[in-house]
Image (spheres, rainbow, N blue to C red):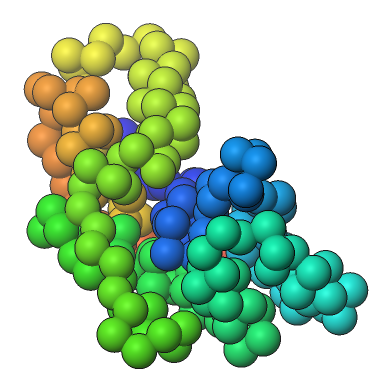
Length: 200
């Protein structure tokens, strides 16, 4: 049985949007959460560039008064003005892989502010991606059921992608041997092998 985290980009990048370091879920002076669309766009690979448009930048600049601590708004604007969305998403993906391998890491955000680092661990990662992890486990179990195989008869689970290195998936099939692939290249390699079979 092979499993990969198809929510790799959204889950890793959700760490960015959930980070209070950029003001996500900040409450304004009336106790209301500041508009959060920008954080979700920064956490969605194909929408990151939309945050850099003059219209969006102008709207974000006008939101400064909503932040009781304007330091968070300053950081958010640096991300936008320096076009750092994809770089931060890459940092989040690296952190996800580091956490899956060793349990804790630190996300370097010095492009935004000198000495700005965010401590990150498995608990925070699983919390940030709890919906995706639940769906991954449910999909894996549904696949086994459709194949007419009992969960106890799954002999091995092939894991690839950073998130799948975490225990939540291997714990779902306790009798299976866990086999790890290349966390960065297994999917691309598999696609290349398949393409060779189809087009060679």
